[in-house]
Image (tube, rainbow, N blue to C red):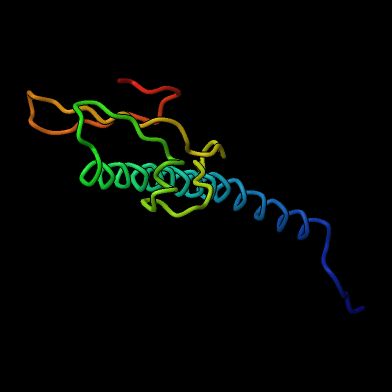
Length: 118
């Protein structure tokens, strides 16, 4: 008699092997996704900080000044698109404080915050 098909034991063995593979790969894939979100988040904040530094070089004349992300967009230092933090999904907005430090002879940057720190 010729048998076609698989036995129950063979099917269960395949299912167990697939489950083990899934248990190994799912955490690796989740870690990779989280790492990518972290890198993209850092890149988004870095992009805004670079825009603040460019704004500082061209516009700041006082020892302390604040600028918002919306102002940076209006003046062309950032693209006029919503910039989101990929980890939280929230829009990056708020005030960036630009202060002159006599100790270091350079500007320091703080932000984003809910209010101007001057």
